[in-house]
Image 1 (spheres, rainbow, N blue to C red):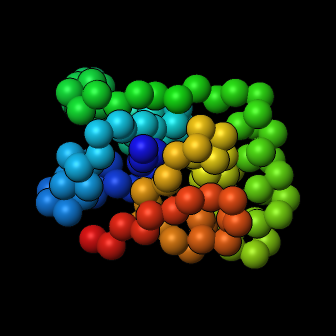
Image 2: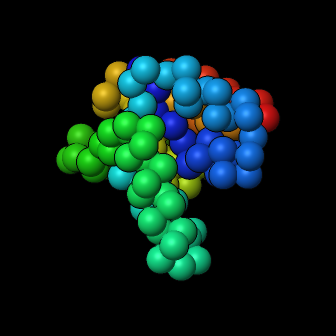
Length: 126
């Protein structure tokens, strides 16, 4: 079971077939509420908002909420990894969502995530 980082969605939107196949291969598709908000935030108009929502629905993604445990774990990740790897709060929330839900995180952003010891990470290379 896979949690997809925001960058994988962006690769798909850019027409990257490997990213699309990665999503298609996964039988259970998850994204964090953080990724959902990032995708909507990047939309320039209502048409793009609708596209994002339709894409998520058509692929059957399950949006995982921000819980107290995820927030706590993300804050620990910031304390432990920001100075080492440049981990930002959004990425900490995404990583914590994966760990708290026993999911593998698919991302092409190895720099920020590879130092997190308890994270199962699948590095995507476009």
